[in-house]
Length: 173
Image (tube, rainbow, N blue to C red; front, side, top):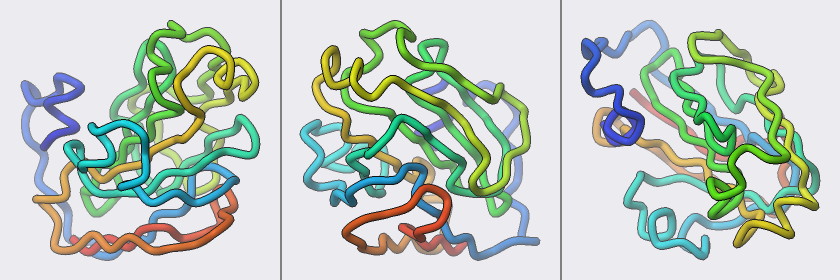
C-alpha cells in the first residue's frame, strides 16, 4: 500500500477491495508521447519504487482521469493526484519531475479529495511552458502504487497517446 504510506493514509481503516469490478483498463491521463517507466529520468519512478506504470511527455497542460474512481489524494501543490479505481487499484499521476518545488504555481485543480470521477473528467490543468522552465522535466509518470494487492498489472505500449482515450495499462484485481 505504497500510496497509503506516501500520502499518510495508512492510518485510516483499510477498505476491502470490492470484487464487483475485477478488470480495469487505465487510459492515458494526458495527450502526448508514450515513455516507458524505465526511461523516466528519476529513479523513484524508473526503478519502480512506487510501482509499475507508464509516463507521458505531454503535448498540452490538461490532465484527465484515466479511470472511473474516487480522488483519494490531491497534493496541496497540485502537482500530483491519487485515484482509487472501482476494483481497488490505486493510481498516482505525478505531473512532471521535481514540480513539487513550484509550490502549486501554474497548477489548477478541478477536483478535490472524495470526488467521484469518470474516465476523461478534467483533473488538473497546468502551465506546460512554466513547468518546462521551472521543473526538471515535463515527463509525467502514472504508476499503480498497490500492485502487490492486485492479480496482474499489464503495461501496454503506444507511441502517441490521447488523454482519456488510449489504453496504457490493464489491471486484474
